[in-house]
Image (cartoon, rainbow, N blue to C red; front, side, top):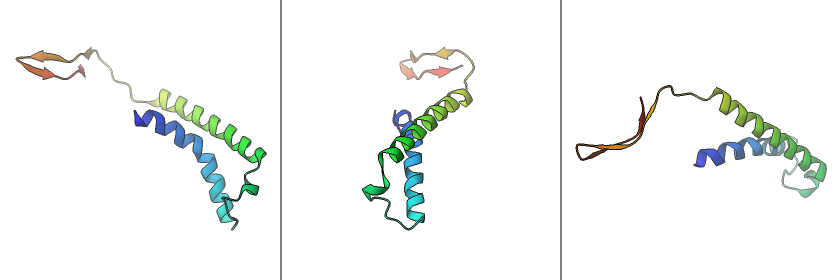
Length: 86
């Protein structure tokens, strides 16, 4: 469950982190409010949304696919056999 929430959040936050690193490399204090103008934040937000959407599409397209039928969990000889792909 955490992976479902963490991957898009990290992809969305990557432009903000890159901008903070850029400000730090310019030897300016990255947490000063005058660097985070409305234009900069809106541009970073749009970039983050585009990166997150593209990343989720790429994860969906290139994810490993399992072939075969799903055998649900069942009980054999009094023991629980977990579900699996056959």
